[in-house]
Image (tube, rainbow, N blue to C red; front, side, top):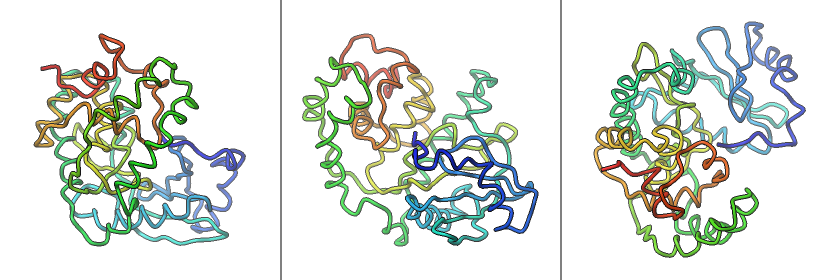
Length: 291
């Protein structure tokens, strides 16, 4: 959902490769093509991730989260980290298998259904983690974060070229949704097929925690509805069976509209259209269970 900043477009993963091999003292380094930040396979056992100066804070975020979660969730074990020439780097364990995104097109409907409760349980385990070390994660004040996002929500969606008929509905919809004061939990923020590893039909890991935050659980369900169940009510129901509790589709849509990387013009191209051109119908289409 994130994008690599334009200032670093010219610094391709291949262009950075000599500096990476010098840093590691190894030549068996191969760049991955996916991801918003430069990531490299180091042999068969390790992964190196780079953080440009503008994203240096995310090194601390990801390292902290991985250190807290390892042993509770199947996440990469941190081997080493540091900074050089203003850039950060993190060396971590390589998880076995392939991403769910890679495998999804070849998976049977039954295999997808079977996997959903396991994914729901994985997210529930993340949300249940209570460790004081995670207090460093942004935002310090969830209410301020939501207010700041609401202040710029119309401008954001116009900039993303969402049709004006939809943009015009956003303020009233957000006013009608009570986000309440739910428990603050650790959030992956991009819980999607791209970041789940599968091997022999089983989940072997969850990775890519540099945008991790703290906040309401529904903020993580934004990516679940958009990029895992993708508007399939049966898959969402099975996911929630594993998660252990229901979610309110309208609250999920509200957080989707407020999400830092929200891009509804793109979502409308990829997901099924709602039966009616209303935000309430959209919420049920993408986060409902079809029941």
